[in-house]
Length: 576
Image (tube, rainbow, N blue to C red):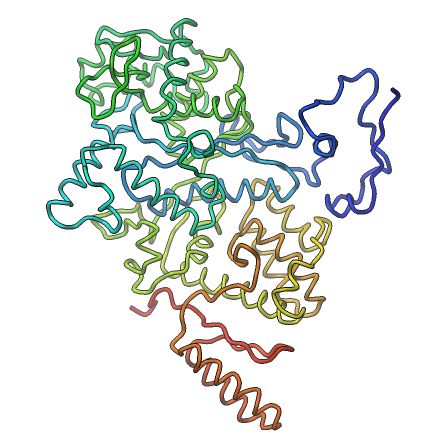
């Protein structure tokens, strides 16, 4: 067999949005290995095509912006540190999770497949997690105590009656896991749609379903000289065995040794070789959740969970991207690197480490005492704002800032987010009317990434996920009134495949962001009256009715199919 060439046709150029492709690409020659039989030929050749844009991300490991290409052409393996399911997730948690979601959606937009895994921690995460070894109590035990007290006081959160026994950590984990998935689905988190009760099918694996994998990794670390059993019976990772410990966070073993005093009890410290050595397995027959092991019945440390689950579920010892919040850098991610590289012997656990900065509320750290600690449900159900907030508005508020800057979540910003989403949905609704209705959406040919407006959007995101710049290009485009509505809709569909705030799934006319003051029948009656007045050429009467609707908070649009009205949501009273 001779050389194999791929001839680049017009359709492929449009799909990739790369007009500078050569007429033919050399894909295979006799000197190369044969193509993999397990992969379809179409997908194999597609994987070899260059990306349509140069992608650059900031790598926390090297502290610089670097070109990104997946290890395996065409496929990105990405792991995200997920929730510890001992309570409802707050908006700071979701800021980090949605950053990873936008990252995934962007990579998929430019033609890459993304194998994403987000763990669910349901054991081993201690309340004092700012130190590598952990301290305090298991968060699942804390959740059990809290729910037990709430049950006695008759203050169980909605749906928590499914927890018939607050002392059963599995019931607690199931309740809060389902709550997280519900919130994630509402906010457009794609990984949430890949959750499954069957561990073999879920891309959101639970720690308690991977105890054998954790024990196997711990055993391998012991055999390779990276772990040992302390005098207290617990298994610890020896940080002195891994020269790169501290590379991600910038810590040194000397500094960690000097700063250890007072953070962990002296009995625990005496059992270890170095104060910074961290827990891999804790024998504890009294613990709420425990498993048999070669080191005694007990439970795993928090850090080993992610190393074991990422390797097991992504099928590689080195993955492309690992994300989390900046508070995960140390100790959690530093310890993950030591464990994973120590067990595999490889140079990297993840090629890119990407971290979202903290979320503030009205310029300060979230605080229950100050009344600024908000779960997603506090916002969407209106407890924090006085008005229910559509999840699309909250999603926009949490993704609109660059992930490497602190996000200041404010009520004014939430109001601005409502206006932005309303404007996008208004434009989509108008264009849908102009092409003949939502049934025509499925007939639209997909926009190529070489469309100028889409190209600008993609280039911004390719520059270290510059979401603020990308959003700026969208509204600059919306300000241009002329253009083919079918083409505009095709472009907006691609843009919204990343933003996730305009079109419902399956794609159709965007729904109202909030209920208006008029009943549906009355609103339709007034809109019909506008049409009647215009047909009678009584334009003053038509304008008067539309002015009344605007005074009631409606956005009124004249379309070829008639006059339409969308209610502008009020998410917070800014004058209070």
